[in-house]
Length: 373
Image (cartoon, rainbow, N blue to C red; front, top):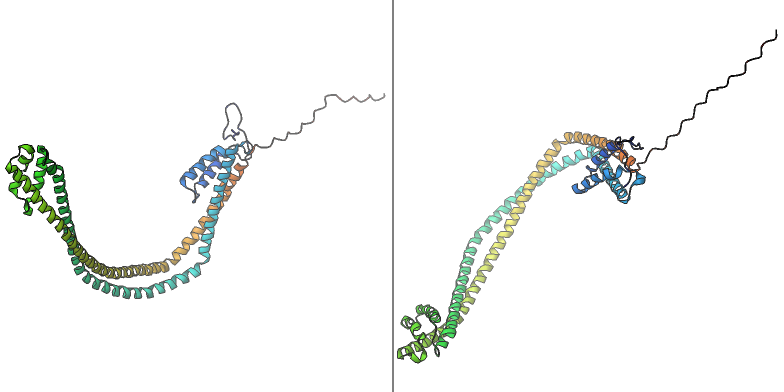
């Protein structure tokens, strides 16, 4: 750890003096300057501020590598703030120096904004008429497309329901009825078949009276079944066969009908898309015209305000310039000098010893010889 320059009198000894004394106020100026760096994040500025006390308060000759790196990073931040303040002065000076040209530009901008607004108003009126015409042609197209979509949905549901029923019937016959021809079925499986066949009664192909006896017949052992049971088994086989044949035929017809409604929907969708495209184009044109008109009005208002505020803006620019100069001067004489002093922080030179005063003569001078009588 490097030796720090003291900011007070340490216990048991005098405060060490350096060529940057006092250190504390200079560190505060550097910390304050870091906080003004606009291109550094808050976290970065806080890190650099923390380095000030750990690095700049240590004599330059005693700093270890990390502290020396910290001093370098702080120096870069100080240079950044210095450049930032110089740019602020340059920008403000440019505004003040170009006052006459700025006034001419504001006057010409106001004149152009007024002429442009008249053209934009005419364009917006024409665009609104075209958009209103396109809305009328869209209503019928939407209705036709909705009807076609509903027809497709209904047909899909019809086909799906028929397919699901056929699947259930085929499964029940394969898993329950066929095994029951040679073996007694369980009550549970027999009831599954009964429920499935009950759903076919409304088709007119399966008789409800046959379904009523399915459970009794299937839960009876094949060798114990009587003539009536045989009639029930034959009826189930015959009637479900008719259902299966008709279901297959209906499925083929449904697929053809599905293609027809799909074509009708495609035509309706195409007509709707065309109507929507026309309306979309006209609506976009109207939106663009209205947006341009709004911008034109805003531009005219801004141009009027700019002309009205010219004198006030120039006074503010002069004040800003003076403030920027004052800030730069304060920075140069304050934080910049403080950092320069702390960057090369060193102990003061050894005091030159004062010359010793000449010693007084201690031996008395010999007395003069007495005069002759």
